[in-house]
Length: 333
Image (cartoon, rainbow, N blue to C red; front, side, top):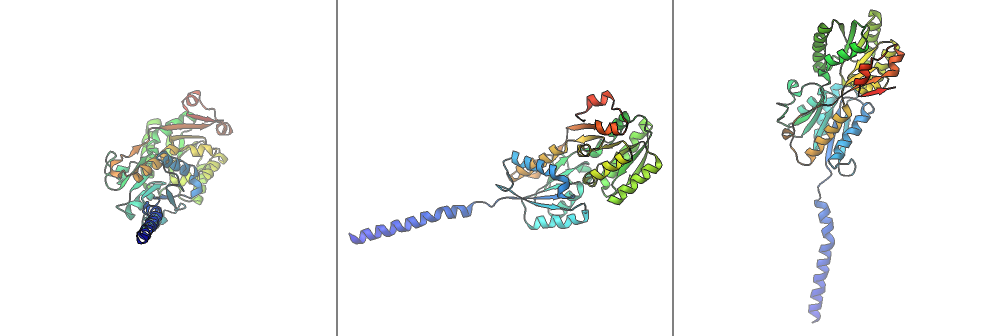
């Protein structure tokens, strides 16, 4: 009898000890928090709004940074030669997906670093023509992403600039030679559009702060009537300098993103960039849930916005035509 009681007690003790260990074992079997690698060519402070939009896209898929997903950020600080090393570091950390923003260079760096980790890119030029994906509908391999079309809106932007500054016959086109793909399409399309409108254009190159300043000195000497700033991640990170120099030289300018107009620029026409970065976050979230890049078609931006800064126009002595005001998605007073 006593022996039976002792046996039962031993069994209960053993069972209780095993039960106490179950939660620990279950916790130990829970998957680790997934990690996203975010790779960009610019400084972090230059794209704070875009990062917020990216996180919103993740949140739309149920992922909140610090709660159920971690993000490792790598910024090249406008030094594209650092991108391969930064991409390799993300691969070494075995991130679940790489989000590559800031032009084609981060996307190519990530592509060269891994053939297995999913990559979500954001580029302004056609990703098929760039060689990032096989097709828009079926990207294949481990890449997919967003095409924002900003390098393909050149003719429309020149048309809007001519409508705002009808007296301008000579237009400076500022491009970044480091963004070879963007620069090539911008120059080709600008020259074609100029022939159709009678505008005379001159292409100026700049890839550093000093080169930007030098380009504006050249514009002032040559007496251009307007400025067309080409799409470039580097230019976007230098938007305050560009806007200030344009204002100082009383040079009406058109830009590819509303961020320039928010900084005091005259006019922009291009993709809703915040929505594009949100979509990058959406795709990253879908991949974390099990989607494969080759099954996610490249998203082509369909929402474009015309933003005009009327206060800047007044400073430049311009009157914005009523037709432009009626067309604008937003007018900044």
